Image (cartoon, rainbow over all chains, first blue to last red):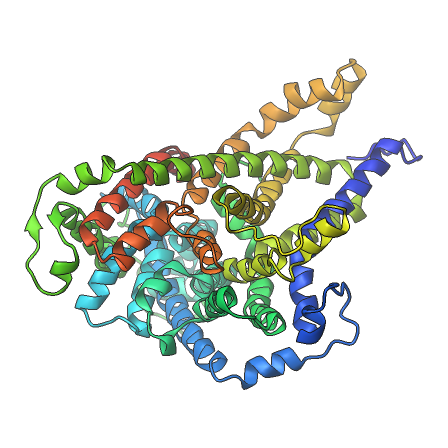
Length: 284
Length: 313
């Protein structure tokens, strides 16, 4: 922090500022390069000297991606799976968060413990068994199959996030409403629920990001080309790049299309997400 | 608040709050959907996996032959195979190296955020947020394009700097493959560490730092005697999370392999399980290795979960 009584910029601080800007540039470069390449025609991208500014660029690559038949089905798959996951995940997590923050009951501590452990389980340690499960249920290559796995993967942390919000609404508010003649259910829906809206939005966006970006489970469960989600669809381009010349302009346009909604949503929940992950480690 | 409206006269005399005393079925009912989906999507596969790891379940069984109970044979076969140990060793080394680099860089960047004025700090924070927000797969495609052997800008820059990197294939050699993977993983992981540590740094009171400076403590001494102890709790948590996360770098490794790297010499745990299970259809062996990964993760997660439980008053 700056010492206010010193007006003159010290050389040390100037150096630090320059380093900060350089680090920022290095970190943002891949994101910039994605946008830059997405605007440039393939003839420029395959020339020997890279062009660092999108001069002479156009939205042609985006038009080509839209015109190519495979983007829309993948978008449809991603949307269907993501929205299903978000809806059920929020509902389930909300009910569970109510249970653990509004009631003291036998088994509560074990449930919380189980939830916390479950959210740490890696998909890589379970996907073979999940593949087998979905194949025996005839749910391979289906929205329902993947959504079931996603809800289970995302619901634990969502409960953990929502629990804080539910606990943050004082019981006294609800009780006051009940003294005034509302039933417990009414008091909940009229008083507590509206106050929980920000928490539901944050958790919903978290679930959205998880489902939208998920790769591992999708790769195993959605093996047919026509059922690919956007991450698998993007992977198809990279796979193709290993064997034949890739139109990197189009790939970067495709990446941009996948990334932009995520970046927007991410900026909404970033604060909540960090504080949920490192809860208590930073005094807030 | 509209609740005071006298027209709603539901309960004439509201019950005097019995819910904390008498056991009520309500909390259990609220947990039913969550428990049901967790049992279906995680519990059942987990049980199946334990069972299958004790069975011979290979290609023949995929085509209908009944699996055969073999006890610990899969585990014995797995852990007497040098290939397994190569994968385990590489995974642990990759995970520790990446976590260490990420935490050190994250702390340095957090210190930098804390040391500079508002404008450079915001610039740095926006850049970090953008990198953090990028979906893994989109990041991977961009990095693969950056490292592209033919037209990648990294080869061009290195060549322009006087080194001959024309048409250099980064993914061919395992060591260079892991270098690329490390650059990418560190790039995507540092923002989380930097923001978390920065949040910790802002809690350190200015007076303490000034007092220490007046007493003649060097910046180095101030860092080790004041700053480090103050950010220790958050540092422990992010380091632990980083280790756990860097053990499960499936998407990153798979995408780099897809871009044209040899798989056998670059597999880490996740991709190796994938190859055993999906590639070779050996569910018995894949299950055994999966169980190993799960046990490792649960052991590593233990302290993190304990820490979170303390928060759950």
